Image 1 (tube, rainbow, N blue to C red):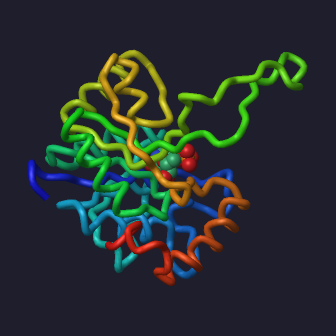
Image 2: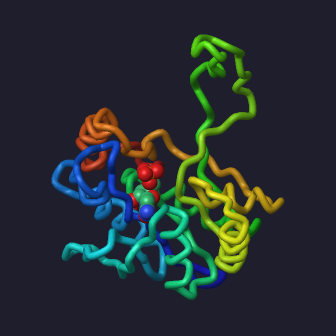
Length: 228
Ligand code: C5P
């Protein structure tokens, strides 16, 4: 890949509380863990893959990556990952999003190089409503211009290190990295994501992931969609 080295950073140190199956990254879908799936999707496109794991856990064999101990929060885990590589560009990707099309990896990487920060996003399809004080229908929220944020998110590494340091110093907590950049006034490019890139969070998501895996693993998606 031209234009400087790229590393994929995978925060996978969560406990998976909402799924209730132990550390989520190690949960298997059709015989392959979420982590192994995510690593396999990224490895062909980057110089190295670094994974943050729960304390005391090591990488199962067959996963081509380096691992480090994660932190108490996702943000801490990403901060540690940023210190564990010297790549010029980093792609931060949640282990819990195993169905990652190559097109998304290419486009996020290209936009990160050009703009400094980029994230995969999906247009919001549902009608949106903000609940009122009684918990019922409060106010309609127009969905035009609204996007759901996915990963991978790509950054020039120095830019993200700086933003994380500021966030830590100011006690700002975020659930993603692009938001940390945006908070400081930095530009974040929005790149079309993919519906299959949903995050496996609840037991219902796991059932959906089993169904997606049956098609994904058979390699029968549109040819232009994927190739790696
Ligand atoms: O809990 P949630 O699904 O939002 O976590 C998003 C990602 O962040 C997961 O892949 C999880 O493993 C990771 N994480 C982490 N370190 C933590 C908490 C979460 O790497 N302390």
